Image (cartoon, rainbow, N blue to C red):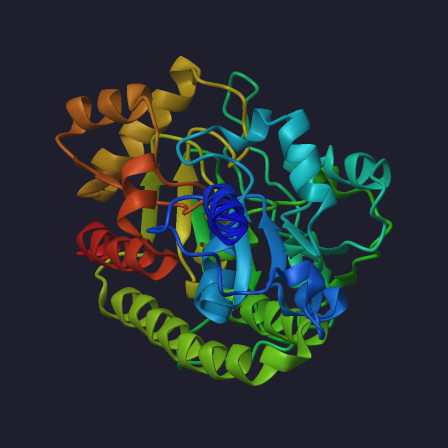
Length: 382
């Protein structure tokens, strides 16, 4: 009897322990929790393996880094696709993202007056800052004057030499003249490498510099080369990968440069007309084109004077210019008036300053947009 009672007590104990262990079909985990492993992975190694965080303010430098670094960096574009960058103000979320970045790439100049004060206010003072206008030779924003007081002349006498060598000579001349019959004066623009450039002091007030430096493929090459070196310094482990990608990409940019040069060389005219803003000073200077526009590249104006419109219409008719250009996200108000009055065709010339949300999602690139510009320029010069 005593033996039976003892066995019963023992059986009850076994059943109790089984019940505390949970259902039999749910086995206990076989993996040891990470926090109690004998050799936990060092936190320092995990941090070091994280990709470099890079923020680009607008599309051109975003795409340049994308082509150089691919998925080896954590890349983001600060200004949303389709947004107007000239009126941009960072949100608190933007501030947090910037503070966590290792590299911040912006344009500099008039449109980025907010950058330095914002970066100086952050906790993270180790962020590498790169301004595009510091990577190439710059020119000052030109003014346009008509007889009502708006300037349509081209003062190309102010340039800022950063000591960058432009070795991408495809045999096209960089010497060109702008003949303005309506203004009865003549400008000769000599773009030889021996041109007398004023040295640009990086502490100089950038407010009057034309910031659209990326619109010239020749400048794009210099920018890509500089960004590649910066990325390689910050992430030496992937430096070889960056440089290989950059070399391939620069070949694409050189082909783009050659395509523009050939179109200009084959053209029957060398004048372009924009019924819009004009952010292409660096591009037309590179290929020896004369240009006429309603506004400067960063102008806040949306309505041109009657004299400006009349002058552009007269020019298109007199020189039988077949195409009037407008830029991306344009209202086309002025361009439509000129086209209707002259019969000229309207075509977009994309500055790549920003892209639409649909284009961004589709993965459009700087080279894609500039190749389209090559074909539109071909029509304009035919």
